Length: 318
Image (cartoon, rainbow, N blue to C red; front, top):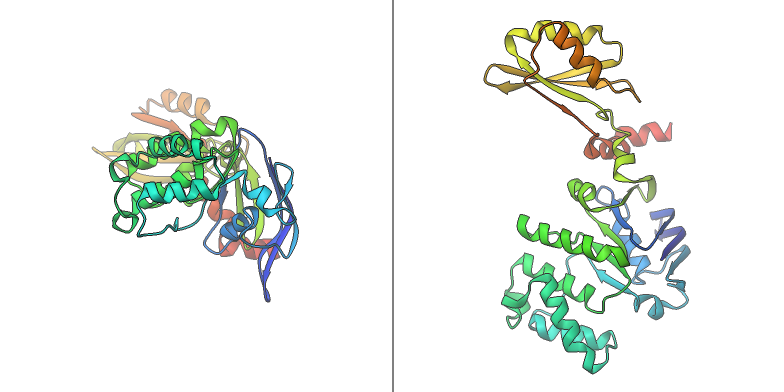
């Protein structure tokens, strides 16, 4: 539903996006990740036709976003960064204006507005001037206009920005519900959102894609993939350390106080190895009680840092 090929955008000597290519199909929620200035918003603006690429191609449902921008924009719902709106309008007035701009038939406008208001829970502020609303409600007004015409493609820049935890939960549920029939791209800095919501994640840095895969595939690249955290009594900590040193599949461990006279050890396995069964059996054989243990799937934040930090860039350049 979205096809991006060798997309590049330059601002004078600065290459904001460099040769980006990816596709998004029906039923996919693509999490678009990257540090500030990585090129996420610029890429989204090119997909939605608000910026013209320096080179490359963008197709949305087969429409060339450069040659036929209106046709492409008609099938996209776009929530830009900051969700700009006319402050002197009420949400109802703004959504009616957007419905007309979307060329919705007059008879279809009221049902479309009613549906968008219900999904984004805007009923309580529908007749207030937008400029008087909280940041969270303004964001929901922006989300309502994005889904107003029930478009098959959604592009959303930080859709939960400014929302409280309950509102974030509601918006995530809404995106998950809509995703069955749509292609959705969301930019986010909230890594837990990627794990909870996205079917796939793409990490961009310095205008280039540095990773593309499911959240599980990305977490498998973490040094904490299959890591085991074990909590033991402080009195048995030295014995436990000896056990850890003798385990050939353990590369190393991290320690932290666990309260109540206990210590937590996070044990890092060699790549591709699972250590939990052998580890727990060895602790039992040595009469060391594991008060609790957790097996990790990996940590997206650690993978993100490893791919986008200054050290990672130096390594890639070398």
